[in-house]
Image (tube, rainbow, N blue to C red; front, top):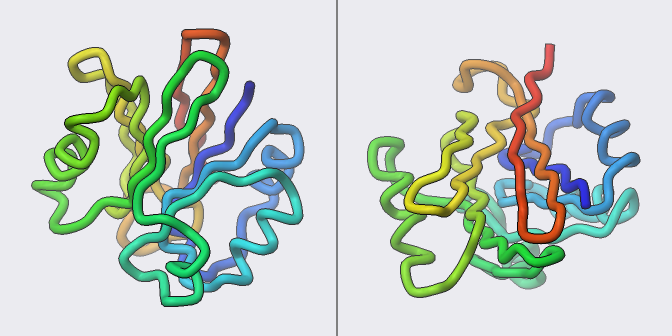
Length: 159
């Protein structure tokens, strides 16, 4: 399965490259900070979506999305959590959030900075932000390729 992974869209228009990649994918994963429920509905109209809310999301999104989620994709358990706090403690907080659950991948956002690293046998994956042109070092989204028990994460930089 091919999953398109996004975060921190902040009510901005999604780049055309990302929209085209979503149409060619099997599933969209969004880990929060939609900032507008219409973004969620537009993504849901394009493709099946798994999502959690972020710290900037209002009650409308918090009413339909969980704060944290775990789902199975083929033979891989994937955890979703937006993240919280300052960038220096973000990875630690994300790791603690899933400390007692068996997950193979943890997808998170919040920092607007891409991250793709295996730590203690778990892939920690932050797609960055596809819309941030101020705080992020570059605009990006992620791709997770899942085949049975194997998963590969890739960061796509948007020009």
